[in-house]
Length: 293
Image (cartoon, rainbow, N blue to C red; front, top):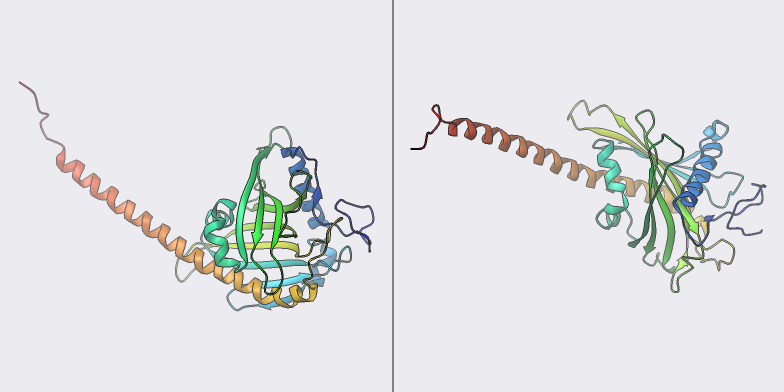
């Protein structure tokens, strides 16, 4: 089966890993790569044609669901959908997953996380009158995955436009001569689209809540043109992603709950201090202004 790093007109025979861009690496190129992935997700993973073809791998009583779709365009690299109710408002969940937070948050979610290097920050205005889209080009590294070697991912993370109260972000692996394969690492590939939606506060606790949905594809082997594989069998990923995905989302929920509790406690403390300052200010205000002699 042929290997390609860029798109082909025939989905039936394409193995696509990453979006090809030039060595110049411009904001326009990065946004175009993301836009292509977003449209592919819309017509494939999120198409009404495939609504009933998702297999539920793991479902918990507290609102976590992990599902998988093996799309005919590339059945060897399935789509995975992870949905969970999260504590905190949309901004809390968004900030938790921002790249700037990864050094603190990712080790809680991914035991194989090995670090992140930011390669560049970009903006692009999709059309006149629309707000600019922020993008971060980065390289993520993993530790050894059980008996298999270390991986790295070169990808762009995109903060997409907000629409109808739903925030959207996404990632797509980038293939460019500027960032070639690195000795000691297998080049792996990922793409994703995430949706952040507000939910009513918890009726029992009053805790703010959001719904997080992440749809993604990951190939831990170097299956692109010029790649040398990586030996991790896809059945290993398929067999474990249900349990590992649910565990990851549950760990994220626990960490978010701690962060939200700390934020609310800090807000209450600030409010109390402001009240004390007002009282002190009122007591210190003289009834008759002092007149110097």
